[in-house]
Length: 342
Image 1 (cartoon, rainbow, N blue to C red):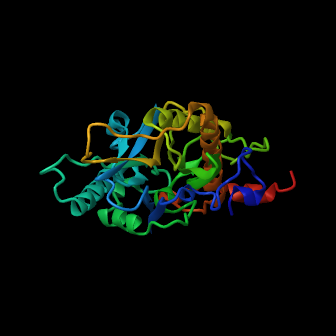
Image 2: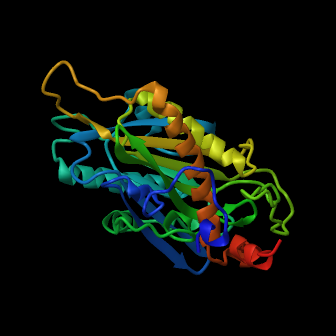
Image 3: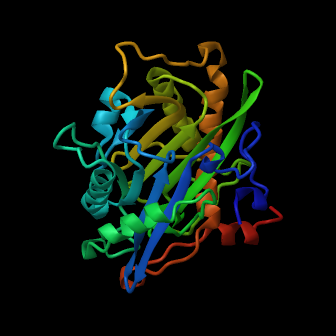
């Protein structure tokens, strides 16, 4: 069940048909879930568009709300404003392995990488699932990363799957969530979608859209978790606009009660499928379509609302796991069922 199945409606904008990041045409998501013994981890892959992304890059931007994180590839995204690989999400100690998988796949698709042309900027983001998984097992393999890439499809599984398998959120079980908003631009339906890896928030701080404050019956501790937000849109925007849109995802996180504590890594990566950039441009001048800034408020609201709902979907869809020494987290879905008449 998702947030809306529990009567939790976020914002005022209409969702897309799937209410998922894959409402943006061409975007696909896949998971590889690793569960054995005290290991509860995995990989989630976001494929922004079909085809060779290295040769036909996407306009992208990154907003680091709080930089307590070990992600790879974000510096070049921020500098050049391009995305040239799929995005992989995993646990903190799986980042290097996932980078290797992306590099090997990119070289297989474009053998001149690193020899007759530039190297490739693999993008991998992470959260620490060490409470619910034996992170020192280094369980994520390159095969898992490739499995997540190969499993990518328009239907997005949520909750305790892929990279979200061992994640916690506001003292509850967290994980993967997604949502979208529909925007009409020049008479055409467009979308902005969010996918989150939710592993943040102090127990007791969660505020639902209806004002209720669920109690996970866990002692509040310093916020040491993280959240990765991936935003996708088919609206034509430039990097400056995309960066401004990514910042508004922070409003969706804050609406739920988070304050981005010292130990929390909170990162937003955004891309548009509308402005593609050739690796080998054919001329000195590159044409670029750009939304009027007078219309950008719709994008800001969409980023806020879809991020907030994606987090709630992660919480509502999560299923229980048991980690090292019997560690577990309660489920928000169970709390909502017990308090359905409140």
